Structure formats: structure tokens, C-alpha cells
Image 1 (tube, helix red, strand yellow):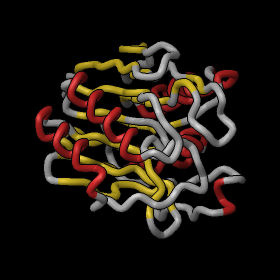
Image 2 (cartoon, rainbow, N blue to C red; image 1 turned 90 degrees about the vertical axis):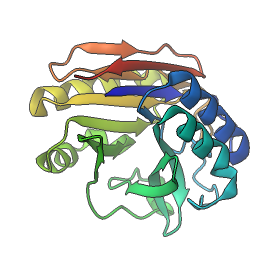
Image 3 (cartoon, rainbow, N blue to C red; image 1 turned 60 degrees about the horizontal axis):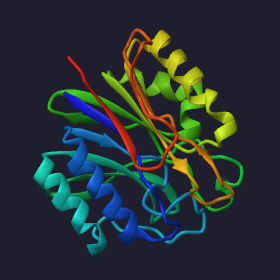
Amino acid sequence: MTIAVAQPSCVSYDVETNVAAHAAIVRAAATRVVIFPELSLTGYELDAAPVDPADPRLAPLVAACTAAGAVALVGAPVAGEHIATLAVDGSGARVAYRKMWLGDVEARRFRPGPAPVVLDVDGWRIGLAICKDTGVVAHAEQTCAAGVDVYAASIVDAAAQAHVPDQRAMRICATHRVVVAVASFAGSTGGGYAETAGRSAIWSSDGSVLARAGTAPGEFVQATLT
């Protein structure tokens, strides 16, 4: 299976513009799965309006997924006051996962999701995580206990915290022997993040880095899993 992690350029609150950036990456990556950062459709703006999976503004991304034969895992606030991952493919969009472990500021608005989620894509089992989830040992334990091949995380970190995703990915690889794929915001993304970490990456189950992006918005990297 081919997989990509992406760090699109982002305009806070502008879903239409951000969808266009996502669609362009999906077409360029031409992989089966493309993972995007936390709240990638709105920017890390904790007061952004919920995004309905049926929102017509998502149509260009659905079309790109149709053309590429891809599943895009994108971030958005959704109804019920959740930070979520939407799974988008040629058939449309749906809420795939709701973040279980919230930051203190996030918890002022949002509610934790109920349970881990594992997606099946062509027989590959992809466990979903959003940012703080990756730092909670129990989240990876519960997710991987369901049987996963890939632990896929959508995150946002400040540039000064660029080492944190690497440490967490290495722990998950060492403990659970799974591929870890992390899509990290790059550039400015709102919510006080004037400069985010970038460096999205994919690690093999033995902890070696299969692919890593730089720190610029718009980058993506990909790997073929066998």
C-alpha cells in the first residue's frame, strides 16, 4: 500500500481554500492514503465552525480522491463538539474518528471521543490518532490491541517541539511494532501557532525513518508499505 503524510498550506477558517490545497496534494501524491494534520480544513482555530461531512465545499477533495483512487484523512471540528478525522474518498466524506485525549484549552469547547478507531483500507488496518492521543500510552495500547498495521496521527506542534513527535513515534514503533505515519502542520496555522514544526514523517515498524518532509508548508512525502 502507498501512503503519504502531508502538511498543506493553510488559511485560518477558510475551508474552501484549504480544501483546494488538500485536493492538490492528493492529486500530486497519487497514493492510496494521504494523511493531513489536526484541524487541517480550518487551521488550529478552536472556535472554527463545525464542518459537515456533506458540506458541498468538500466536493473538490472528493473529486481528487476519485481521480487518485485515494482515501484522504483530514482534520476538522465536527458536530457534537469534537475534534475529528474525516475519511474522504470517491464516495464522499464521513467522520471516521473523534479525538479522545484533549488539551486543556481544547477541553473548554470540545468533548473527548468515545473509543479508538481502526480503518480497513484494502486489508491494511490503520489506527487513527490526533495529536495529544499520541502522547498517551493507553491510546496506542488500545488502538493497537485491535490489530493495526499503521498508526496514523494528525498533529500540530510548535517549531520548538519538533522533537516530540519523533520521540512518541519511536516509542510506538518499539512497543507495538507497527508503521507510524505522522502528518504535522508546517508554517502558521492559527491558535497561537505562528510557526509550526512540519517534519511530517513515516517510520517503519523497526523505527527507521522511511520518509520525512522538511519544514515548509505544501510539502508531502510518501512510502510504499509491503
